[in-house]
Length: 434
Image (tube, rainbow, N blue to C red; front, side, top):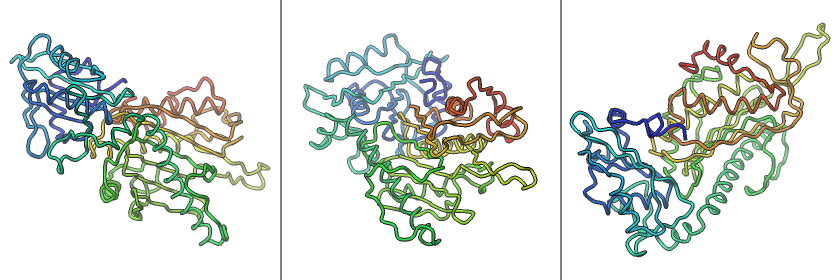
């Protein structure tokens, strides 16, 4: 990964970076733990095992937390010594089966010989990881109010889950996406019925793999291995209501649009609205497992004057796609930071119904856009991203750049000049520095 929760590669993180991070007052949670020092190796190895068994996470050694689970300010650090990581590694090898060796960074000591040890534990595909003669199996919980600790002994059901974790997570992720797509289709059908378009329609079951309504931009981001809820339904409703992302594309004053119309369903919060006599659709959903879905109509039809001799043509706007990518990733960043999720995510972009569609470019950015058409009906792109890589314009820029370059290749622009988009978006201040 290019970045960490500190916004830079792990091997470049120093004591100042850790202290600055602590000032942001991010609470301990399912992916983050603070330890004052290495005096309790049992506590360290429990955190490592539970992270590996759950969603992965970060341990910051040298940071003391307060009663609200936030880091105490100032973050002091602890005494630097040689071979700090060896102490943790030996504990893991002595007490964990199957052992998993985390990734370490010992910050260069400051003038007072204080340091921080950063421990990154990836989510493990070798789970379950047992402790203490294979007698204890821990998972990380999102709320310690019930048990008093962030680690709890796994139940028999959780043990079985861990044995088949990867397969079950993939299956669960598909089920959640099918559920949300079904929610959208439900709104879509009833909207058509109310407007006298759809007539009497029987909805397919949620697990049926029908195509979504065509001509839609579909954006999805989710924890890579979802296993359980990281928020409740009320939190999902409040989180969407509290987002503060400027919609510089002009649909509304805030992205996503129409959040005042949000409503809850069994496993999350959604909003669905239409414009222009139901031809333009907007849908947003936040699932309690952390999956975020956004859908918007992105195909439009030109309306040339009759005297021009040109026929109406369907097209999509590159500037709209670019804007929505940036705003959607900003939304995900804001939500994940508030719930304390810092693990791996699966980011997917899907645009369907665009066969032989023309790409419309921002005004005067290309000499001849007539030739840029897609010969295929669907665009699909997926990327694996650390949640922390969504934080900051430059980090999101790198994710968006890869996505747009793939999209433009599909439209026949094989030598896509990214500077064209840089100049356009500097004008609307999307990215602070390109």
